[in-house]
Length: 205
Image 1: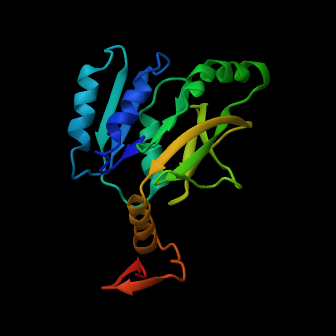
Image 2: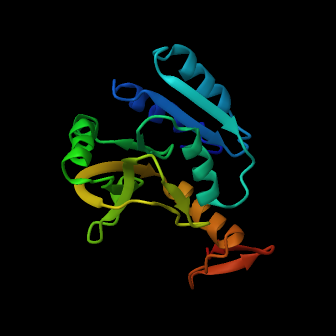
């Protein structure tokens, strides 16, 4: 995973991963956190099962999500990669299904699997009509991320869509902060209900 200023969610995410005996390696690239993200990661790591390999590095975020995620991916050494964002958790049935999904590679050459990400903002479920399928589990070799924003892993011969789900929970304030970041730092066109305030795009009040 890649992280930056994730102190509010990183404990839940990491502890969630460590509940599964299938997780053998955790690879993290921090983009320059100014909060307690890195100390929290160190605390979780110190109390985790020592059989889990940890690789944690700091690389200043250069406004290219694809490149940053590729850096994290290059730290991985295991055959299969499970990707997660710091503000997400997986449904318990995903961990139960991982081994069965990996067996499909031997059966029919499947190399990557999509999960449906269900985003809740202040508890309200979004993307009900249009599911947000994300590629999150894949055979590591030959895969890289492409795209400065809205990045995605690529390099698969066969991709399978599953009915497994990811829980993505945010507050409205967090979502608006993300929106403003995209409008002001990544060139994403702001919607009509925004205005320039001191040179920054913000939602009209």
